[in-house]
Image (cartoon, rainbow, N blue to C red; front, top):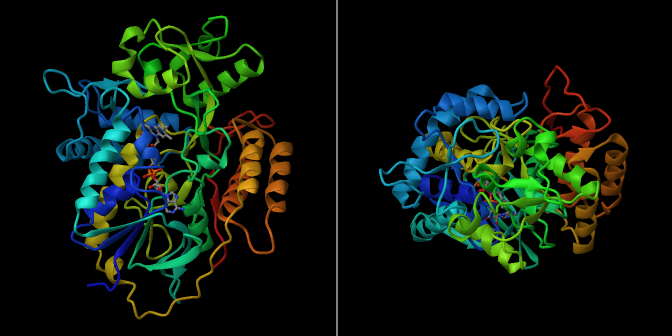
Length: 499
Ligand SMILES: Cc1cc2nc3c(=O)[nH]c(=O)nc-3n(C[C@H](O)[C@H](O)[C@H](O)COP(=O)(O)OP(=O)(O)OC[C@H]3O[C@@H](n4cnc5c(N)ncnc54)[C@H](O)[C@@H]3O)c2cc1C
């Protein structure tokens, strides 16, 4: 038996699922926030995409995924994930997730943008994330093989003399704590918290990407940040979401004068790809015409039952969506890029794994198909757990006696610089980018680095902005007004520190 437990960093869907499935291996699960809090997984409204409906198939799901990804999806990954999806959803059902079903037991599936079929398994309308997370948090807390350590924030990775990842350095109550692991699984979620206007938890600043990069792991596609078109424009931080399923139900985007505008931008109208809808909203808002989501006709009185989360957020802000359109604006929502992994979640650094939104598996390319991320989290958590349990090298590679390189903790970013960073990212690394803005942003980000070192959020921002500068074309979520066309060759960004 290995001397150390497997470390899982992050208690969202990816982290909880892999921790549970690793039984009977010993797991230590580290999370910056208490389990169930500050995890995007718990805020997911739409649900989990999978080919569960009559007339649907994994092949169609994979084709929609590939089309949404604008040339950068790995088709083999998309097909394999789509084929595995229904089994993983049935597993969640067996764990007790109360997916919405009709009288015959068939799943009630929502239609979301760029899906050719209704394919999103939901819970009580818009409560999928909360319901899944409640069940998994309870299961992990009850699991004897998992030790949960909360309120510890990943700072950096520990390495053995041979370069294998041997554990993590965490920030804990103002000091550094070291946790050793036979293997380390990163599952810290996305990086929307680098932006002022976001739907993500504030702690989602891509720390896993920085930590993995510092030990030589390959990162990919960092420039691709998906902006959700319909965050509630009510001044709340993070911005509550109005799920795309509302438009799937027939809700319509309108100007302040009530005129629908999406058909002028795209043949698919309100269900056009997310990046198209988000840029259209930005244009409408920028032109002073305003933007709102009108669900009065399509949802109306059914709002409290069908979309209880959105309804509550609206009512808290004094907006009754049954009576008037909901003010909306785009917000940073999902990061397609991340730490490159193989089909089981292994990175290219021994002992290091990455799952969920911080990973780049090849599924999302330049634009994620709606509700494919919860699916990706459960599919890859399942595979990683199988691989970690089966692979004797993976479990036993790091013995307690092995010599470690000295830990090199990274300085924390102070609150005022983080606020400046968020504002600057929203200005120049947002929905529409150009070389001048990106170059200025890069200089600003670099100017905030002190002699003490480069804090993780600044490193991630620097890499993202550099990738956005380097991609001199427009593709998926990355729109360069100075390079508005998509190039024929779809090259992918690869970044790596020399060892
Ligand atoms: C509002 C909203 C709605 C969404 N709706 C959907 C949807 O309907 N369907 C869908 O497929 N996707 C949806 N998404 C995207 C999806 O929720 C995420 O991509 C997915 O949940 C990511 O799961 P994860 O486990 O990787 O990360 P998360 O669920 O974000 O969990 C990250 C975990 O890491 C911890 N953590 C973060 N930083 C650190 C650190 N430095 N050290 C230690 N721990 C850390 C956090 O505390 C948390 O426990 C939505 C996202 C948002 C924000």
